[in-house]
Length: 267
Image 1 (cartoon, rainbow, N blue to C red):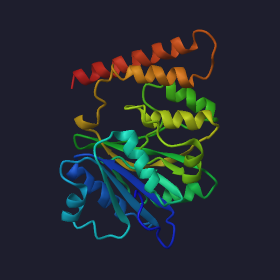
Image 2 (cartoon, one colour):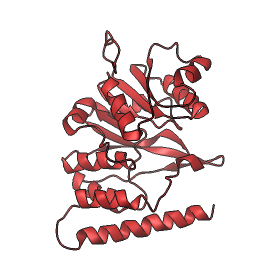
Image 3 (cartoon, one colour):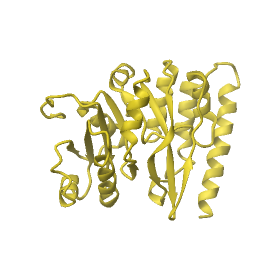
Image 4 (cartoon, one colour):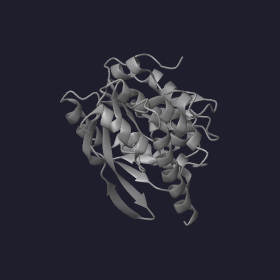
C-alpha cells in the first residue's frame, strides 16, 4: 500500500520530498520542515532507491520519531514516477514540493497558508540562492494572466517559477493529473504548463521561503540534450498555432540553453 492508515485529522499541508542518495542534504531539508511555526502538516519522503535507506538516515538523525514524518521506499524509477508516488500518499489539503537539497524557512508554511486563504489554489514563491557561502534573493515575476505566464515559461532564460516551494491544492492536482512520467527531465515544467493551459493562474508569494543551495549536483546534466524535451514542450504548449511561432520559440530556447551551457564550462 502507498498510504498507511488515514490520520484522524487531515493535515493542511503535505510537504513532499523525493530523494536518492543525498543523506546530509536530506537531513537538513527534513529539519527545516519540522522547524516550521505552522505545525499542521505531514512530511512524506519518497526514497527513490537510495543506496543507504532513508529510514536509516533520518533515524540516525533522530527525526523519524516525529509522527508527522512518513517514508515511502521504492526501487529507483525516476523523478516523475517518484513524485507521483508521493502525491498518491499525500493526505494534506495542499501539497508543497520541496527538493531534497533545499530547505524551507521557518515561516514558509505560515506564509503559504495566509496567501492560500485568499482563494489561491496554486502558489509559487521567491527563494534565496546560496552559492559558495554567498546568498542572494531571487525575485520571481508576476503575470497578469495564465496565458502570459505560459509564454514566459517557454521563453524566459531563467524559469519564472521554482518548483521547490510550489504549493498546490490537492483537488486541483487531482483534476489536472499528476506528473507526466514520459518526461525524464522538466516534469515540473510540463506540470506547470498543463495547469496554465487549463486556465490556472498561480499566485506569487513575494517572499523567499526556500533556501536553494547551488552546487554541481543540481545543475541539469546534458543541458543541450535537454533541448529535446524543451522542443517537445514547445510543440505541446505553444500559445499560437500560427506558422513560425514554434520555430521562433525553439530558437530562443536553444540560444538560452546554449548560453547557460557555455557559462557552466567556465566554472
